[in-house]
Length: 538
Image (cartoon, rainbow, N blue to C red; front, side):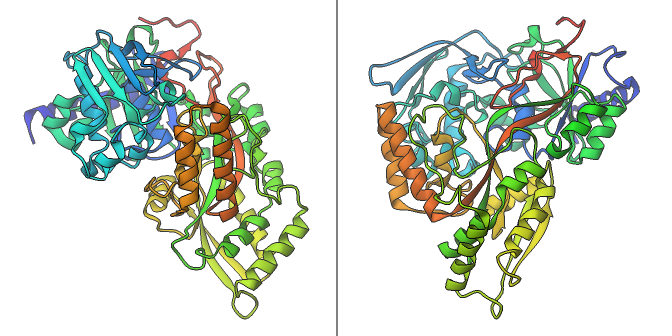
């Protein structure tokens, strides 16, 4: 062990002891914000993460060309200004004077390095396909062309040029996403994957990681030279990896938690009575959908997939279990999504009485060869967080109502592990959800494209669907673009690689004494905007 790592370890130990001794922010010498996140953090590398709970931490530390405003809308970050050419495909960004936390200037070369890095096959980014709108990005990711041919070029230290394959009306919003964040080339090349460890990490945002104990908590402290640090009230942010709602409520009752990023919707009135003013909801760009693994028998048969989708009683789940404001979903793209002004598709049986739907489901499974002499047995895995464990037994009962020869087994799974299994296609039927990275239907519909990779959980591959999405991407007319998206979504829904379940409201618990919390559909709430009554930034 090096002297540097010994010193870092000692400092981290002192920090934790200090936190334990403080007993909360109100009487502390160091103003501290305490945030609960819903699962364990696997990585803080913005090019390797794919989790909303990790984004809570990453977004406090690293700032992209654009960043989230207090209302979740894109505002300038490292880029002070920008312009596009007449085709809408060449964007030129002009960077301001910002530095990394070690004093090294943030330059256009950091962005060039970062956007090449996320596409390198050896990076194995789960989210690389989100940026395939950049010229040659997919070819770089496939190893077909060198990274130098990516359509991202540092013209000089302060000027970055990005060339897209097609115009993208959502591009500035996309640039708030962590996949587009810069990384410090000098730190990454020196430390490799260990660059995100507290003793090595270099950031350009208002907070810098100081401590990380896996399965417990992470601690960030204010980075004085970081973007937005001067306006930040809190000098320290503690992130607790809390998956259990009882543990969350116990911490709130003990005065040890200020924010948590979920609560049980069915218990909203009870939680409000116990913690007045804490529950916060807002219409979200978030759809829960369940995936069928089309690479596994019997879910390579559309009749089986359709039958199970038909049988699910979404209306009862929404009415009896989920948070007020949730709506049954019969399509993937949420109703509030922008750039989708057209007749939106839905499954044809959305308003069919459930008794008729069960009859159709029974007939489909019998046609597929299942019945009392050949029962359909399968495993359904569901997330351990939020209301998902309460919905799963309802789904189990719904499927059994097709016939007693339909025999599902439900398995509760750690949320982080479940998403890993989805990416690895180690499942047959699985719960999951998607929260928009940017406000455009492409962000949902690209998930089912055959070349999307790990995030196409079902393994769906329909050339006509791909053709329609690609045509929509190239289309300049927004009305025709929306029509192409709708045609593609309708086709996909008829193939049943997934079954949409419900459109969600955001669900957070927030101490009423906090200010600066503004509800937004992306549910992004950066710590730099939050304060407490009577506090001022220092």
